[in-house]
Image (cartoon, rainbow over all chains, first blue to last red; front, side, top):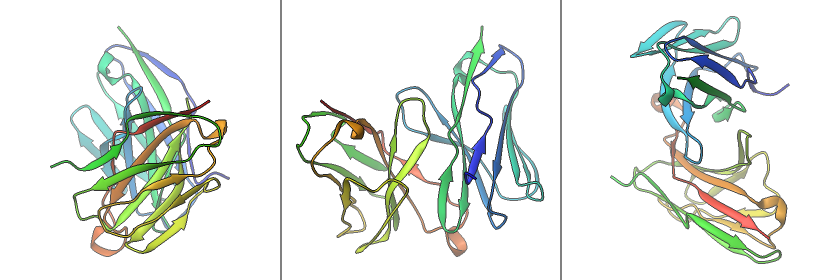
Length: 109
Length: 117
């Protein structure tokens, strides 16, 4: 089993809709969780971090964490064409950061 | 504040050649990492370092070597380049994932695009 798994995508949503990205992880001891956005040909950039169960909102982004279910998600509200990118879930486990394979999101104008 | 700086940005190598990818950070981070990313794929950890003089293998270390003589620099060496090493290489740094820094994310460089022909 991979340490971090993401819904494979690609995900296509119309402009203004909600994009929902999912991630599960295998290490129950994981404490810190991150979402990175990566535009084509660019390096990953951090957009959200979450450490406690529940929701965390930052602008149009909401991260949700459920440690009991070993599940973390990212919602993008009012999706814009500029949100078209690959989103990487990352989890700190055993003092290392493990990445999922990423989900590619395309926002249709 | 430069952050994480990688050089070169692009390089084409012939099979069997060697080269060093440079990475430097100015944030006084003790952890540094090298990843490779193949087209349409996620990041795979090659090597990482938890401090000067200390390095360890990641998921895909074969064909690569690293050294960490200073806190700032973490070069990646390719010996006998092979076509399978064609990829984008990212260097990243962070504070330790222990204790008070356990929630600190990684900072990435802009990447080195390497083609081996």
